[in-house]
Figure (cartoon, rainbow, N blue to C red):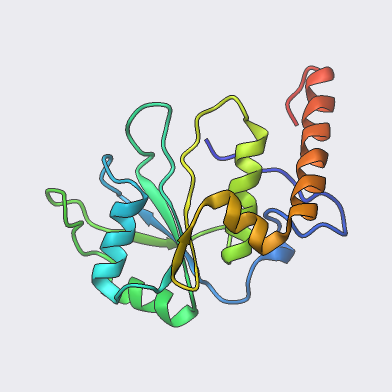
Length: 179
């Protein structure tokens, strides 16, 4: 389940909104993903096609079952890496499947920070659900999602924005509607 929530006000740049989109397409949505794939599998496929170290964010969302949603997202370190992935992977077959072809689209949320923020917001909005956390890399080193988020946006912003989201959520539930 992907949740969309409007920005937290004019001063906030956390989350997806049109003004926050990057000018260049660096985040791609990989469709027709084999249902058994996880973050590492998508990362392996991309690394095999364009070489390692060219992706800094990978997320293969899962349903409440043990199967993924059939798509995944990857944010590339630059536009050249994203273009190479499209050129070398579009229409090819996934390595570990019988005949499924890779389809690649531009993702709605663009950029490393935008994807971190969107993932955090989705997790905060539905604290009762189990979540698959993205695989995150900073300067080639894999980091825990929360550590990466705090590194990029800072702990103070994280706490303030999380509190704002929770207040909005509570107000919506008190009125009987989910925001």
